[in-house]
Image (tube, rainbow, N blue to C red; front, top):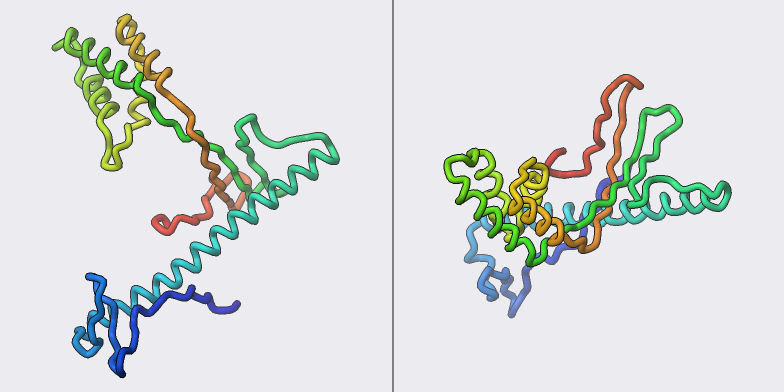
Length: 216
């Protein structure tokens, strides 16, 4: 097996009038002779590792593209020969080897955003909680608070919003609030995920083939 070739990363250096300089964080240049050795080593190490990471990222992008192309060709072949398709309406599908030990799963997830109706839902749920006062269970208050609080990225907590929809509360205002949440939901495109699994035996649990660096 050939060695993994890193991507080309600029070394951040130049030579001016015979003096080697290195770019600094302020947008200027500093003579290499004035930079501490450990900082030079750190600079070289980060650039080297980034070269490997960039090359790996490019390889994964090509791999994903080839995967969708190969699956698309396979489905086109099935449609041509048998008039058959794989998966549901949303495009979710699972393909498996004949021995049942390896499979790939393709899932299409809708990207859901919320419109201005969500603020109406918040007002209605606040009215309910204020009137119920001590009669409102602490867990319901906690769910409502988490649902309408934004995270660090400024995004609504969708999982908590969906949890509100599952609560069995018959107060008319609460019902209207849940209707407002449903009306606020908009599908803004979708994201396709490919996951790979393997197992040693037919009665063994599936093990995911890790492609996530944080989980490797």
